[in-house]
Image 1 (cartoon, rainbow, N blue to C red):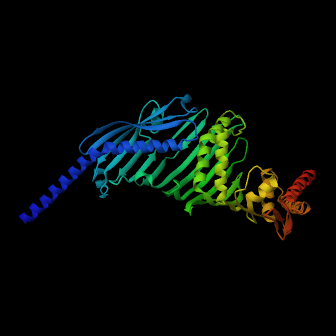
Image 2: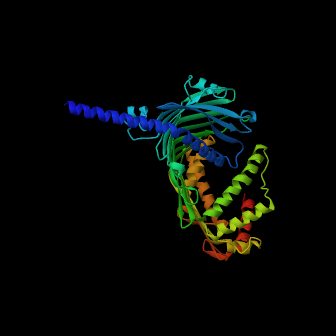
Image 3: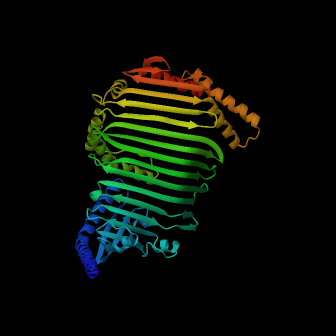
Length: 495
């Protein structure tokens, strides 16, 4: 028995020594690790601000090391012409760091996987954050809990406390937000998910009050950095309901909104798919229906896509933002060298024969569904400086478009419009709605832009090799353009 006790005591002593040695080792490495993390974070912040007004940075102010714990202080600085009269805003954070391999906060929760450190960060009160603290009853409105492994993989959770305020310009009510995130060393792989319970915002305008309300926002995203430098993988976001009301206008509400996206690298090119679903749309409290939009992109050359994106962020986007701030219309201004670069990169992009497709755009009401689709394949023309018909023939190798309008759906929308206008005679409304649907069908036939097939109005277009097939009638692209101009004139005269 005594021998067993001695063995047990020996194990405890050895374990304690190992933990102590690990804590000491962590303490010696911590400053370098934090310095690298701050440097990497600033690089990512700088990349995120490209093309945007202002700047932001993180600074490690101090690190007070002890044997089992350390305390770090950070400063986050953000500067924007529209924030704080253009003067820098500084937020201070304190980070209580527990050394590994077994930080006590993780041991208490029976999480016994060894880590280098566990971080417990909180926003500190200063002149810039004291109003925020007042709205959260003097509790830190922003906290974070993270752990970093010896391989520098990180896992963490950020929480924003609920708060609300009201002033002469409007009100803001926020239920709080939680973000969970993880990443491998050097950010090669990232995962994140977040939850927002509710958000209510009202603001005043010259026309009257404007309001926005969100309920149950969740998102989940994850990706691995590919050879392109883009994060490849999935992303999805869901909102149970979103309500917007402009001044003097009825409220519009979207329910069960879902957005999903996927980005992939395929044979040196980028492929993507983006889907938007709205389960229920209401206008002025009246049901409209549901909607879906699906986009697909394929064969986008990686190098040229990155180059064009960089030009947009560094050259075009700042100009557009400056024009918008002044309330002016925007016209791009690029130097001759930038113009030549754009033309060269566009040529490379088109040489990969990109495919762009609006697979589905639909609106479904109680009695019918309408939908539209469009797809096109592009190629690199011998020159962009050539007549329009010749350029189109070389640039667009194929284009397909299909439109189906449901007459019952048109009737539903016409009835909704009449009800929103205050009409109450349901028989008269039904008769007007039927007339509206028949009028659309008759106009399509008169202008020869569509066919009526039962309860549907259909129109199709196919283009390839300078030949347009419009609802079964073939013509050249120039003839088609002239025909469409004539139909526009006829439509305006009919109105």
